Length: 114
Image (cartoon, rainbow, N blue to C red; front, side, top):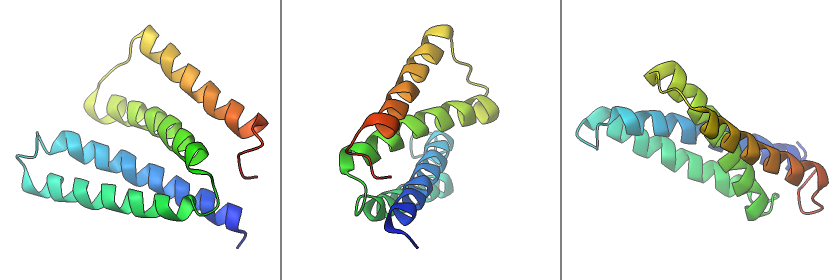
């Protein structure tokens, strides 16, 4: 498998695991519930482990920008679906600006791995 493809797959997995960990962070109720807390720790650990594979081929700054941008979108979506936490207009605009930045990095930066 191409190293760039593997790196982006690892980054995608890191993002998914981080978002799942954030869901369990909410469900842990400030670490007062054992199983959600343990799930959160395992998911965050898996996320960082996967990120270590991604940054073998993707520069850390690019990987982190993508991880942060995609994580924000997915976390906002999951928060709305699972916890019914709606976003106001300013939050949506802010997220759109972050997503725009990630697109600019991936489309125009010579640093990004393609």
